[in-house]
Image (tube, rainbow, N blue to C red; front, side, top):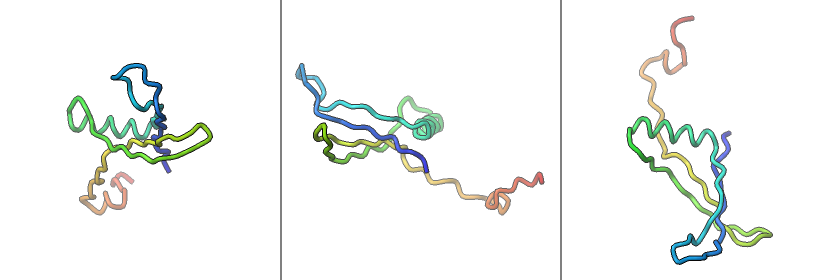
Length: 92
């Protein structure tokens, strides 16, 4: 199973009106980054849309929001032949 790209957001010490309300770090997994890069190449754009999810949590340091980013769901292409379905390339 692949690890998920998970981070934490905690209330920020705001010093200016435009300062963020929450700050934190995200552990971006290679599998997530690779999938996002593939989708960006295939779409040919300069940005990619990904999913973001959040959960409220509490630990010894206080309240925080766990966040996860993940690529948009892509349905795997359906095999077009019996060889593709069984993973055979015919060279054996």
